[in-house]
Image (cartoon, rainbow, N blue to C red; front, side, top):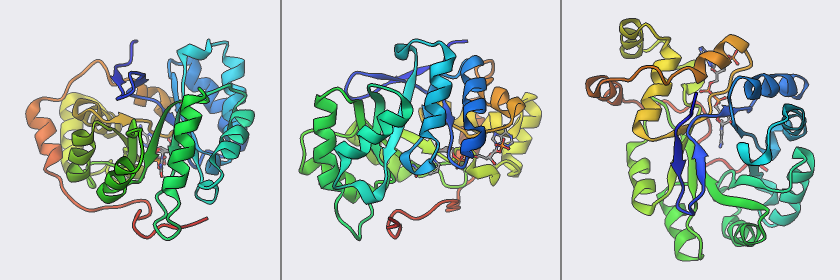
Length: 273
Ligand code: NDP
């Protein structure tokens, strides 16, 4: 099955669907990432703070896949924003890779105000080929505009919490205006959106699961997604979303669910080191 790709503003392409490994215990990560790669996944989203880069790297190594068949993202943790080159070197060592496809500033952490330092280092890491693309995560409009005004490289992506009950249309419109691709984290709302009645009704009619309907909505809206599952059946199910389409009315019905249901921290106040 061929997974659609999105072309980023730097010309690189990213598979629109991947696997996220947040809250995947290191003890089981290698097994689940290996299973995902064996079942067609080619895009893995990890982070230094997830504590499982080494296990992701082992699964990649044992997969036998060529490096250029894979898209690997990792993220710079908040306490390393003034130390990005060393932090990326540690991540690459754990992953067993010479470069990552995408390196992200994980949070803006406004209290510390060091994300511009991080970004200037990351511009250098991109120029050196250690990160093919660079981007940000959890950035709001003011963070994006300041970063773009004070640097040479526009982020390739902004990875933000997006799911039907936190659809973030305004921030996605800003990303679009600035030429930044939107990655939707917690695309299922960490399960919170699965029993929404609009979703369930569409799923019953389509003969698909609520998770498949939500992921399909993301794909049709142009979001990049990487649902996390450590259950083999659900992992396969989440990948099996390219044999059906939502009608425009169904997309609009999901757009209309509304809500401000954050399942993760608020970027304005999240400053954890
Ligand atoms: P998700 O929205 O992907 O939800 C994961 C939960 O949904 C798990 O409990 C999983 O359980 C369950 N699930 C997965 N598939 C199905 C299915 N088909 N049917 C029913 N339940 C299902 O939340 P995450 O927070 O994990 O987000 C995904 C990824 O986004 C992360 O892994 C990470 O890569 C990224 N992320 C980034 C953040 C950032 O700050 N940049 C913050 C948070 C996440 P089970 O495993 O048992 O299947």
